[in-house]
Length: 143
Ligand code: HEC
Ligand code: HEC
Image (cartoon, rainbow, N blue to C red):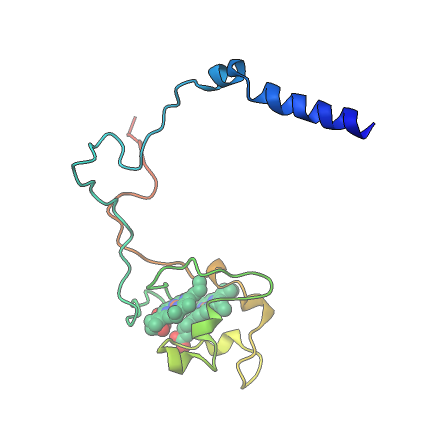
């Protein structure tokens, strides 16, 4: 029984490598490089990236009780187990990280224990950036 199985496996390997198989797999594949149509000898212009105000500056607020805008990138992960924003904005870390501690309204006690309702920061705080392109295209025209 073992011998038959070994023989069958061997046959499968051999047929897998046959010329017939290789010919059908050799279809041309159209791959576009990251440089697009630009020849490799030319430098490709870098795509415009969002420009955030520098890390040390807060953006002026426009009205009372406004959740302040985030003056830096805001893709720090917030998961059920870990909130990366607190790495800089929690009451015990903020001074060291030169960031504003989360507002008094966000905490339960004088140790800075965050309220559950304030855990998902980006529910209320949005980043503000200078973007070179409109984020959403608009083809609106007045009828
Ligand atoms: C690496 C440290 C760091 C991390 C991580 C970080 N921040 Fe900041 N944040 C700063 C610094 C520094 C400033 C600028 C000083 C200031 O205004 O607090 C700032 C500013 C802010 C402000 C403006 C405060 C104000 O008074 O105008 C908000 C809101 C803010 N961050 C929210 C967030 C949120 C939400 C996250 C997570 C998505 C986050 N930050 C992650 C360092 C950090
Ligand atoms: C439910 C909405 C909401 C959530 C969630 C929230 N904030 Fe705020 N945040 C506000 C509002 C509104 C203000 C301004 C009024 C105030 O100070 O309470 C504020 C103020 C702040 C300030 C400025 C404090 C100051 O003294 O000027 C910082 C920093 C901040 N939030 C960071 C955070 C971080 C970090 C998180 C997540 C851990 C978070 N916020 C979650 C609504 C929210």
